[in-house]
Every structure is written in structure tokens, then in C-alpha cells.
Image 1: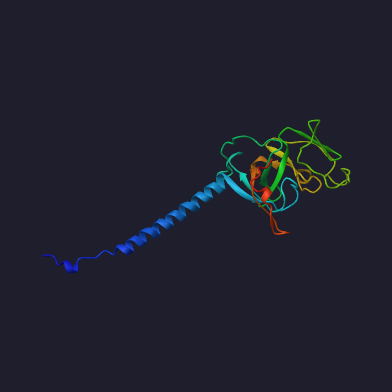
Image 2: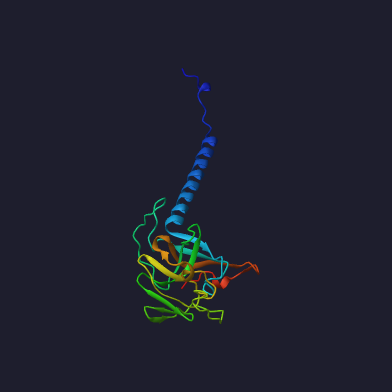
Length: 216
């Protein structure tokens, strides 16, 4: 007869603790995995660091960027999945700065492949027609000749294939395609879609009225 006094005793409390610990670890791993998938393929947050997109975007605005729209870049490769649509004139886009791809820039698309761009005394002409975006502003009344700086008089120049000509809405204070050229399509990160947070650090004031606003 088996001696029941020497039979192994299961510690149910320890087993239950290990089981819960395993569940927590698995949940954390899945959460991290899903976060990385979403960040890499679907949306990404972006913080406005400069005044080049005033008054559309202010320093301290935090945005969500749709990375899916223009085609998701496959991680660790230069390949992209098919785009839902191509960038259009007027889109506010985030892209890798062509001069230093470690930096993300945000500007508005002004010229698409094939467009001829010319700027005369701050006015933008696309394919010979005046183009005025309702979001553009000018805070400097001075008009510089093209020989001095490309800000107010520029071109004509044609946008090459798979490239875009971009400008900041704050036209007199924006480091954009007028100064460093075109944005290759391969540098696109995504389209800015909504402001989810806005903080004026100078006054430590939350701009509640800007939160939840769609970016146009």
C-alpha cells in the first residue's frame, strides 16, 4: 500500500502565481508588438518644433500622421506596399529631410510630379496659373530679388517624377524646397491628419481649442 504521507503535495498558490505572471508577461509582449506594428505601419506621432507651418501648426502642437496612405515602408528594407493614393497638392506631409534623413520635416505639398513652379514677388504660379493656398501667411513685407535669396522670387523649375515641391505655410520663415530642392517619394513618412495635443511651453498653457482639430 502506498504511503499517502509521502505523496507529492502541489502548491496551488505558487502555480496560480506563476500562471498569472506568465499571463502578464505575454500581455506586455503582445502590447509592445502591437505598438511597434501600429507605429511602423499605420500611425505615428509628430511634434511641431518650429514656426514654419504657422498658423496651421504651432510650436508645441502634437500630431498623428497616417503612414498607411502613401504606402507602408516594409521594415529594414527600401520596399513599400502599394499606396492608397499619391500625395496631392495641399496635403500636409511629414517626410525625411533630403539633406539629412535622420530628421523629419513637415510642410505642405505645392507641386506634384510634372508641375512647373514659379514664384514672382511671393506669389506662386503652377503651370502658369496663380496658386494661392488659403492657409499661407506672410509676416514680412520685404520682397527680395532672386539674386539675393530664393524666398520671394524663384524658378521657373519643373518637379521631376517621383518628387514633390513643398513649402511651409509661414512663407517668409520656412526652410523648404525653395532652398534645398525636391522631396523624393521614397522620403515620405505620411500625411498629417489630426492634432491630439497642443502645449504653449512659453506660457505653460494647454491650447484646448486646438485638440482634436483635423489638419487641412
